[in-house]
Length: 141
Ligand SMILES: O=C(CO)COP(=O)(O)O
Image: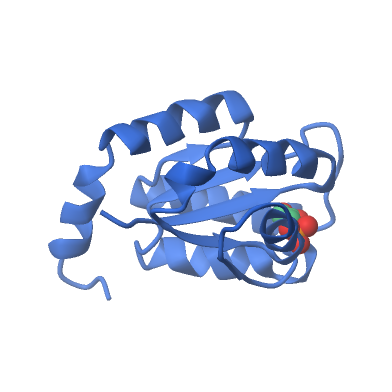
């Protein structure tokens, strides 16, 4: 089962993200990966993974990934936020996380939770997302 996974990291979390993706590269290799611009580039520079890159976060990348969430296309969001640094595009970040709650999409905002979710993914615990894709409620595209 190939799922749609988005990876986003703020600047001071990018190294942690890259190390995390390297550690679980064999799991991520089975899925479709999306990322904001710089995060995606760094992941591709350090792994063999292919990542569909959107705009950089401050230029609208979070909103582009939010559009996948709004359509219930995204299955998992790993968003390593920097809790100690104000972001100019904070409203976009809040909007993305809000949409994940609207659709009930699993989200990790720190690497400890990300690890739990990726292990669950590897075990097959995301099978319910396949059903979501198969039987979308009326009105969803
Ligand atoms: O700012 C971001 C998410 O809010 C991340 O964007 P980049 O991956 O382009 O640095």
